[in-house]
Length: 89
Image (cartoon, rainbow, N blue to C red; front, top):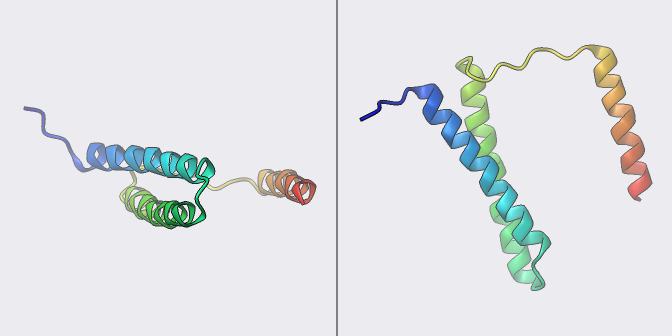
């Protein structure tokens, strides 16, 4: 029997949460009944919260490092997504 460490267990949990959020997002997008859609959106929000908790646990343990971004890359991302946001309105 294989013994899994914290990193493997948390990685599996994070992958599962990513799958769950994708599934509930699809369910909400394809739902015709408003009350059911709102239920899916509520569950989706809860799943995102769980995913964030798992990510933070991994990050704090050093299992999911996130190096600081260069300011130029941050500014570029802001500009790109700002234009996309304005165009969608």
